Amino acid sequence: MGLSQCIDERCRWNLHSELALRGMPSRICTLRGAFRICIEGYAFPNLYFGDLCFRVCALDLVPELCSIAGQKREVGMERSALVYILLTVAAVVLGLWVDNRDYVAGYIRGGRAFGSPCGWDRQQARNMVSMTAVYCLMTGVSACRIAVGNDYWVYRDNFKLIAQGRYVSSEVGFNYIVKWMQELFGYDRYLPIFALFSIITVFFFVKALHDQGESFAFSLYLLMTGGFYFNSLNSVRYYLALAIALYAMKYVLRGAYGKFTLCILAGALFHKSVLLVVPVYLAARFLAAIHLKKRHYAAGAVFIATLIFGQNFYREIIFYFYPYYRDSMFDSGELSYVNIMKCVGVLALGLICYRHGLKENLQNRFYFFLNLFGLVTYCCGSFIPEVSRVGYYMIISQIFLIPGLLNGMKKDWFGRLCRAGAVSVFGIYFVFLLRGMYDVDVRLLPYLNWIFN
Image 1 (cartoon, rainbow, N blue to C red):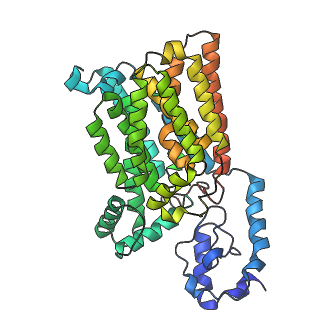
Image 2: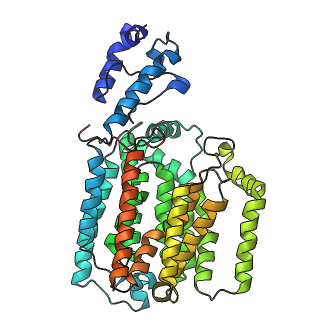
Image 3: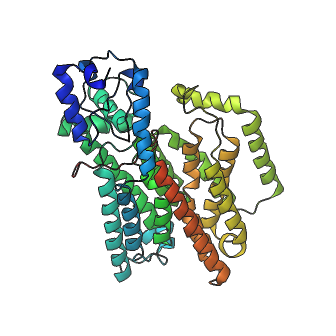
């Protein structure tokens, strides 16, 4: 029995119209419940599943769905991947016009209140123009997306539940903004909501690069090719909190712990996992400012031992705040080998550059200890559900640490080799990242936007 025989005449037109709108073949259908499958990264928000006549066993559809999905794998990356590639190239090229090496120390120290000159000079004005262009490009791609990300329509459903006053598990700050936006633009107007969170998230990313990135273009390149920006098209709440945490690092370096805490509390209104960074960042700041002694190494060894032998204790704490993660698909216990390799590579680079780029540099030492904490988390914290998200709060510091270490190296053949190696490794990682964006649990490709699609 074909699919066309399974669809009642009164709803067949709606189904085929929706498929045509998404550019999908009409033989693809989605099923109720567990078989509500989206093929090739597309979703069908306007289908009313109650109107469909489900008289065919779902198993009869599996071969056809698999064959359609397989056809895409044979083709490889399609043209919409060029949007991400061209965005990365354009943003980095614009970032090359930014030269803020002489200003970062003042931004971290606190600006005019701590002796920095008033107003902008010509270079700062040029920096601002270039960074504004970068911000507009990144925000445009993110804010104009539609049906991009494996949780896009999940968020859309949650928006409706929030407007109806029903319970959702998201934090209160997120819920209030979503409710307010729907009061302003209308019920189920989800595009402005996604756009607003894109505007805010990208702002904190770019502002953090402006204030802390001595090599703006290089840090931007690592932010893009490392996947932090592109993954923010998924998991809207989490990446907003991550961007706020990245921005708040400057307050830890400055010693303005009150402002740092306020920033993190604000981030916790959108994703409470960001509260983890308060002890972690303060510990990294403490270790960066001192000369390590035997008792510090002993304390570190004890803590690692608790991660190995006290896993049940930590899991109970986690499940107290996130009970729905227990025995879920996120509670897999898998190791993130790619992130472990990244942390080990950056650790090795830090040891190579220890004398000139790390030993007496408080800023680089702070980022270095965050990278070390990330390595420990990935190696010993596989019992943590979604451990990659926990580790990202720490290893995102790599976008500042790697340029900081390489800038301290001599301009000889070895220094050039290290720089070329870092650029090449992250470039290769970006290629594999793009290829993985078609996976059903990622679905960042194909890229669609509400202007052209």
